[in-house]
Image (cartoon, rainbow, N blue to C red; front, side):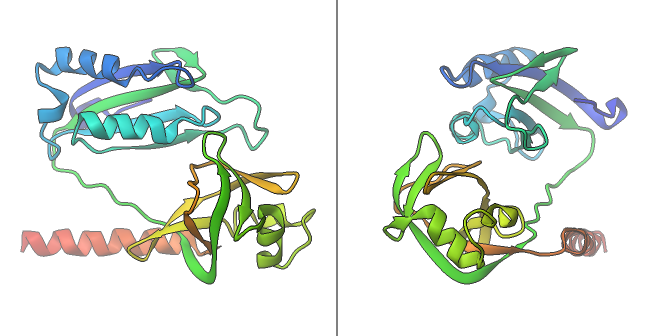
Length: 234
């Protein structure tokens, strides 16, 4: 991680290791508390923001974020490391060292007020599937609507199973919350099942999504936020 030191009043970084077998978020947060002299649960979320970079093959994103949410009201944003879809090994870096099966957490205290802008460049189509047989730990869906997940998805995108993976990133699935999609990107077919990059629970309803223009979408969201902030300053 690299930071503009002049824009930050304070920065502290920690590494959460052994994600697959442990959850060391409390130990890292204890170090943050020693540094700030305050409990993470009482930190002012309008003055602090967190960043997280996590091993994308750990399968532990939800577990780590749940623990963070249990221990603090500070918002942590970030992403998962990839390896150009080779799916062999992914790494995060901190303090000049590379880590796998780990997450890097940074607690930032900017000198100025801040906001977090989030965009989702997808729209929901009218095809909805219910995950009826799932291995949640392995992020694998065996059946949608009681049928093999591979076949249901392939039929939805109008391609044979051997060609359907070409649509995984332009037409992923998404959990709809208050009309907004939270993407559940397919990773690969495994026999008749589908493996995902994100957690899918049994009984979860997922919509087929269609990618939109990420540049135009982001530009529109940033412009709207700038106009809103300008209104506050008038």
